[in-house]
Image (tube, rainbow, N blue to C red; front, side):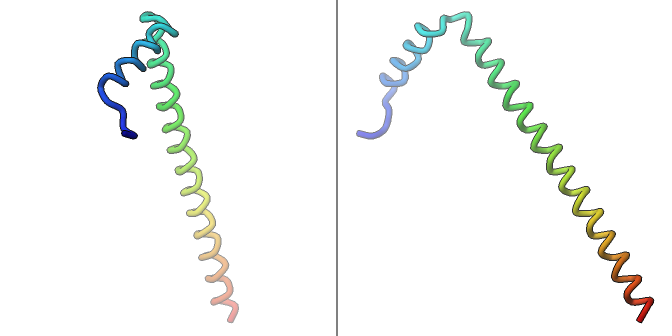
Length: 72
């Protein structure tokens, strides 16, 4: 009872076509796809920045521990 049947999906599709028009739907889908692509690229860039910060931090910690070991 809680799942949608094929008839329900056809009604939903018909309502979307009536609201937005057949010409507007491809433009909306294209915009949605571009937005998803931009989001994925931003996530990848953020991950690269985090990895670079982590690498720099690890190198700085290693340098500090080397200096401490040499002073002992």
